[in-house]
Length: 163
Image (cartoon, rainbow, N blue to C red; front, top):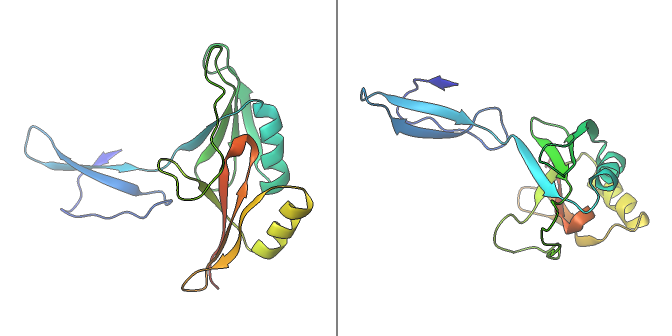
């Protein structure tokens, strides 16, 4: 949607209106476009198995499972919020190289799920054999966070906002 807005409009990440980008048209008007995160896409050795993991631990719901690109299967999931989680198999001939789930790496490092009870979540992950990358840490302001390794060596943050 393109609309005319005042000169400086700000957005907040992970809301319906994010990343407001300014550019000009040929009439000299300033036009702003609203952007938001549509999806997170993960390449997976077995997207169905990975989807079951997200269902089990994050109550994500499968929206569809279909061939999007020739020779690959994509499982699209509702993981809460407006952004979808897409899990896709690898096309034939692609690299099977992975990197470990680790903090402080360049590029896309992780994505996060908000929780109301991080302590119970971490206990559940630990009892289920899910690797804990960083145990519960309280940051300034009282927010608690932790990191786990999900399927396909994906680094996932758990965030419990301060009360």
